[in-house]
Figure 1 (cartoon, rainbow, N blue to C red):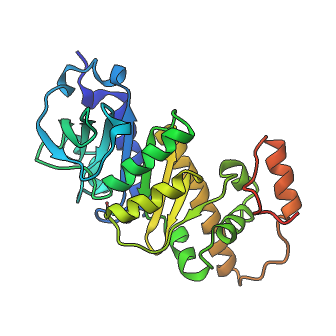
Figure 2 (cartoon, rainbow, N blue to C red):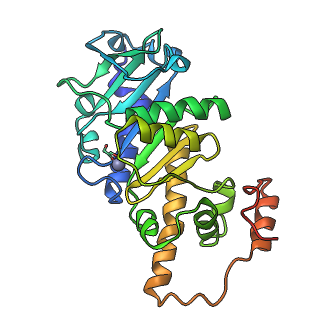
Length: 273
Ligand code: 2HA
Ligand code: ZN
């Protein structure tokens, strides 16, 4: 019988958290991930069915009743997840009334899900409405993207246009642009609600002066979205390092043409055509 620790889901989480840490996007306990697994994916592992603890969610999540999430632990370091997945990761199952969750694997030294669990679950609820195949929410602190939140006007239109114009294929990866919430206290239900409200329209939401929340169908796709956002922000930083003098750009017309070529519809009103 294969153990859950050897499942592709745990392997994928170990690899992606290590990668994100090595890019300096998850200093200390920064960053958190939640990854919804289907009952038929986890219930074949007999070591996942033991309930080691039950906790209150602190908000209503009936839309997620019975769902499993593989999630990083609160206060845990991405740097450590690769070496100690049974401590720093946990698999939880939401109760049938959507009020509580059981820990059914992992968190072996008494850990609990990330402090940003409300933001994750509220975001999952919104993304499930947009696309029921979306299973992942990923939060991290990409350096150049966070830097932009200090130097740029914090509007969705402005930041989406800036990021689209930094790399020809940005608009293909996030044609809806990037959502932005005001600066808020992390870990609260309020930031969860604000993030989730944006998630109904955007697959990625910037938390000014903090980081990004992104959703997607798989860890690869979600992490890939953050890579593309951060790459665009990094090019902007490098332009600054080269003197900041932009002599030519990708025009709005060219952005529209790339989007059309790949069958994407850019966010209404963001391009000037
Ligand atoms: O998990 O990144 O936003 C630590 C954080 C909180
Ligand atoms: Zn954070």
